[in-house]
Length: 210
Ligand SMILES: C[S@@+](CC[C@H](N)C(=O)[O-])C[C@H]1O[C@@H](n2cnc3c(N)ncnc32)[C@H](O)[C@@H]1O
Image 1 (tube, rainbow, N blue to C red):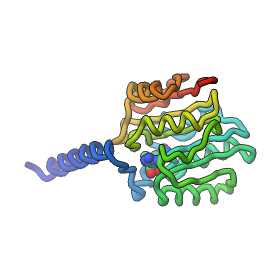
Image 2: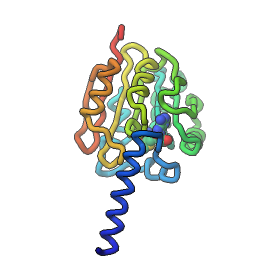
Image 3: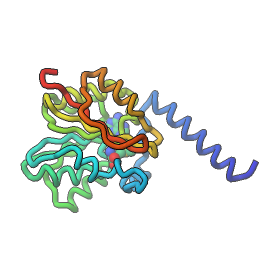
Image 4: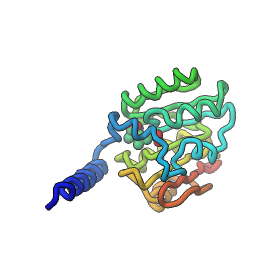
């Protein structure tokens, strides 16, 4: 067996073990890989921050949740779009990710961002307070996905939109069918779909009166 074959086989086994383990406990994208999260993958246009935010029609004054914000790839441009009258609440499990996001917010001279270190489903999001929510390549890293989606549902205002983005390049990729099933279970209604299997964004609405 050649050395290169052994390395590839080892990599595949390690990825599978990691994926299976992350179904049972929280194994988020490591902080040392945050540089990789910040790159705009040229093969996944639909995972670019500007593309995701363009679909979402953010307006000045809106309140936005960026759950699993990582190093702030979407947080900073979202805060610029909602302006000083709006607010972005950026939540992540890991202090190292939040530290990088804060650094970028300072460099962009933004004071309309609230950073919260917490896990999805821990009950820190409140109720009926967000116009929009972002969940970009995060869902597959959350062990209790139904619990996390229910928490986001409750935190959105009636008529509010959750934007979920998934890309095949992410080892925690969730298919469109999986996202649709989990979302429907907590009461979301699909309002839009952009992209393809390589990278897609789905818009999920909390119905008025839901
Ligand atoms: C692949 S990164 C994506 C970061 C960002 N959304 C982006 O697209 O640039 C996933 C992020 O989700 C965070 N995360 C994973 N599980 C989480 C959980 N249960 N609650 C909150 N954040 C979580 C990780 O710490 C990591 O920063």
